[in-house]
Image (cartoon, rainbow, N blue to C red):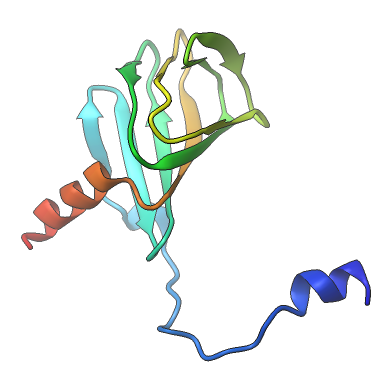
Length: 134
């Protein structure tokens, strides 16, 4: 068996439901802080949020129950992972276990990054429900 067979030849089964295709531009962003916009795409067990930081945006130190992976697509940001402070550019990622404190900021440039949450981030799910009126 080749690596390709192992990777692509996984178990067969009946899908629980149909997949979805999402145009990011069609997602109305959430702006929890001025200059910080989130566009979440939500599955049953995972959430991917496309995040835009305007210059000089500060995300305060916080922690949450969801595991998170973040990575930069464009620009750069300064990221504080429980006291380990580094500047991230495109191609840099970090894994944030549940309840680990972290913070971020941009300086003179805009940054586009992606957050992946498992399970989906509760506060974003709540905001989506409120927006939809349910």
